[in-house]
Every structure is written in structure tokens, then in C-alpha cells.
Image (cartoon, rainbow, N blue to C red; front, side, top):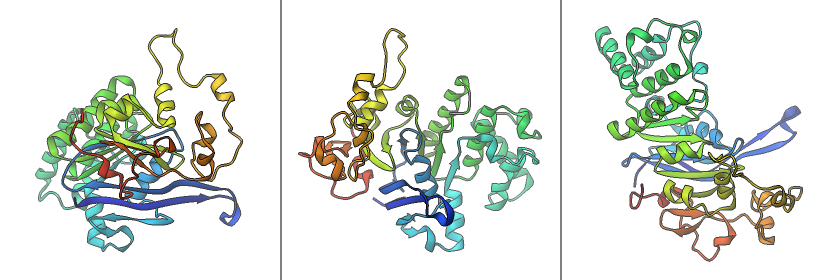
Length: 342
């Protein structure tokens, strides 16, 4: 199946200190993943803060360059693309970032962020066309031109600014929208409308959505497939129905158990007794989760587990499933299929 965007064995390391000789942080480690050019789906990349989610997204849109591996757009490496190919990538792959206000220049009215892509990508033939396109895009995200245009960013709420960014993405007729924590800075009353807008991009317009989040509840409601990341590596992938409802990797189970429950008499998360058994101070050259894993075996400390195809629409990077076959190729997109999804 042809890929719109593909990550091939990509790694990214950040170095600190003088002359970048200090501490080394592996943000993404040997990740392979692709977005289909034919089937538009909604996929979540989930994990705790520092798991490498945002770094992976920045690598996919060319904001960061990988230290190892390659990111390709329609089969061409990002570093080898022509000027026209780079412009097409910027149009077809649209990011929506966590902080809506950071995407605006405070000295410009919000009209600027909507009209600029129309002008840069030559999407309209006249001023009347520009006006109609902007009005239609705002209407699609539940905003009116009267309450939006002509204002500065500080005169709008965070929810309004975020929906404007969804409208801007829609104006470019993208094939893929990367939404990085798009609802983390808006109140609960607006989350549903923003997530519904992302879902509408997929269902009405056939746009793929990559939803980057630490919130498994919204990932379950919005997405079809999910990739769970920990310390820069993928630990479990598959249909969101199976992964969220029946987690297999110990880290995924920990994430699910950390979701607060409505009954205050019930507690969640790892108990103090469980935590005391973990060997948090031991170094590992194998599984990244071994120091926190309650079922870590000796092999986990020395060897990094591959992704085992545990069942249809499920792969787990854990030696507990070593009797299952490993994936025939590193691209986890092969795990995803329409069959049996919610």
C-alpha cells in the first residue's frame, strides 16, 4: 500500500552541555511507521510526557532531522526533496500544536493566519474567493466571521484560537493533520467540539489524522488505532479498542490503571507495595521499561524486545509474548486494518 508519509528506523538524540558533550537523551529510538496514501484513518500516538511523541511528530514534518533512519514523503526523503515537493509537503501535512496562542503573531489580526496559506499556496483567484474560503472554513469549525475576523489573538478564547487553527489546516486541503495535544489547553466544554472537528475532517473530507496525546480517554473516543510509546520506543500498537480495553504490555496496563475513577472510594495506579519491588536504580541496556516493570525478567535488562504480533490488530514489545511471531517488517502500520475496529 503506497505511503503518504513514512518513518523508517528513525532515531533522534539530544545532547546537552558545552559543545554538546554532556548528557545524552534518546528521544526517539528506531521507530518505523507509515501513513497510508489511500486509507484515511485516525491514529493516536500516546504516552506520558517525555515519551517521544512530539519529537516523532516534528521529525515527520521535517522540523527536526533524524540522527539515524529516514523520513520520506511519497517515497522521497525529506532531505532530498525539491522546492516544489517541500511546498506540497507543507500543504498536505498540516500541524495543529498544543498551545493555540503560540501559532499566532500577536501583532497581526487572526485574519492573517487564515489568508496567508491561501496566498502562499495560490488557492484562490480573487479576493472574493479568499473571503468565501475563509468563511466556509470558519463555519465548518463552528465559528462565524463576525465574531472572529478583525480581532487580535488576545481578544479570543483558547478554544476559539484552536478552532481557527483547525480551520487554517482545512483551508490547505491537506491529506494529513497532525494534532499535538490539541485540547490540553482548553476547558472541558470545548474539548468535545474540537475533537468533533478533527473527526469531521476524517469522515467528511477523507483526511488522515495523527492524534498525539497523553489522554487515553479522548484517544479511545476519537481514534481507530493507537501506538503506545515509552522512552522513545513503541511498546504496544494495535486497534484502540483492543489496546485500551485489554492492554497487554505492563506499561500500557500502568497507563490504563492511572486513569482516575469517578468513585473516590476506589484508588488507581501502582500501590506503594508494588512500587517498592521495582528496581528503579538498575541500569538497563534492554527494555526501557524494565526498571519500572513489576514482571521484568533477566532477559529484559540485557535485550531490547522486538514487536511480537500477539493477535490480529495487536503487537507488543514484551518478552512475555516471545512465543508469538515477530512482525515481518518494522513498519507497525501493517498491524492496523479496518476489520474488527470499533
